[in-house]
Length: 231
Image (cartoon, rainbow, N blue to C red; front, side, top):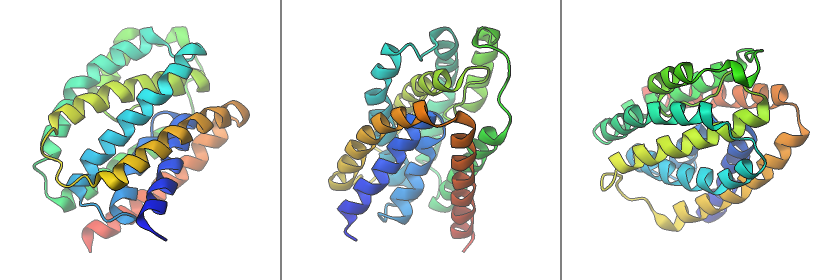
């Protein structure tokens, strides 16, 4: 299978995950770039940020239009994550490839564990701005909104991811290595289209089933990356 077809296929899968689940979908980007397309971990980190930023910004307007973005929760969450995301982006540019691979695996595992945890049963109004800000500062790019219904959580999570990804991308400007735009561009384009389909899937499939299925996939990805890092 050609690299272009792999890029388009992987982009569609990442977009579907982002559109259907919000937080967590972008975690698949770096592993796909490294293991399917042969990117170095450093280049994958930067290219992944480009792809996730383009995808979330492209998908966000539809969620805003449908009323699925809870700004009073998402805004403080996103704002609190800007500095951690920027610092993490700057630090990643100086880390060895094996360390970056372990970091990608850890992020995937954390995202999976958050998805497997039973959702908060309180209504959206129960999530206070201070709590969201604290979570944003602690997690940076590892986003997830507690206390919101599934479709609100997806839309609000995309807002947080877009802001944090832009911050991290700004920190990595000029330090991403060879981004191979002939693959990064099609990957991002397929992800944008996939995110639109993911939004429709989220409206038809129960949120609990989506979370559990994707969490299992993320745990498998985390395990594979850890094995690759220690070889």
